[in-house]
Length: 336
Image (cartoon, rainbow, N blue to C red):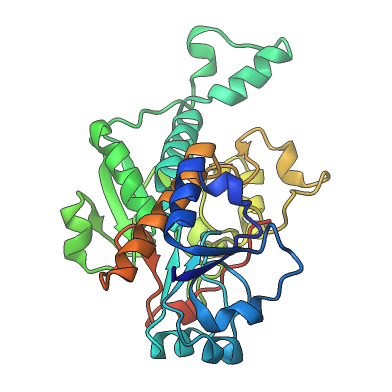
């Protein structure tokens, strides 16, 4: 008999994250219980014989204790949520995986685009031109800067930070990196200078924020730390909104001292009356850095590959594994 795989991808859609080829491969190898097609089906009925769950349904202690054949929980949303009893999963040898790496390429390219826009005022001057207020030649470049050989900081050097560092390499920046979860040697091997949070902010004219949200990093960028940024610094926010105190950010941006590109917000959609919408030194983005068709389609391929490896008694290589030491620190919330 084929191993049973439960497919419960919500809030993702099956056909968005699985190409027809990947879905065919999944069905060819496994007995797939598709809860998107059968929304009235009982997850608990199928758990005792399931080899894998693809998705992020609630899996508490009782559910996992019943799932004696379970070997994989493949989260296809991208975050490790607190709706899984990770201790029980680890105790029973269940791999808990995330599709987060699928977004790294898309997010890093988008972050670089935002940095270039902030550096040269591209979208700001486009808006001015549409109002009939364009400034020709050097008149619109008084605050323009180069990324080439710039002092650049990266906060958080996981999948997104490292992918962005690779894209920045041709610009030959001085790259300072703050990531308290990594040894200095790992940062240095990727061309970065390990730095403290304060030093990274003080010494960087362009700062990319990729930090995940934990109990320690919540409001890491607050009134004090934002105040360390040099005048005319550019801040690119594309990771998790909770790492920033948005009231403090608004206060800094309202003075005109800083520039920012913001893709994540504490309340989404951004309220129509938000004062952020009135600021010309801010690029507004609607949480769209990673969610492109190519990134979504990559998720299904990653799932199929790693399930096959685990079924053969080998470790997964494409998805990110939940770590017992870290998973309890995350404070992620679903992206809707």
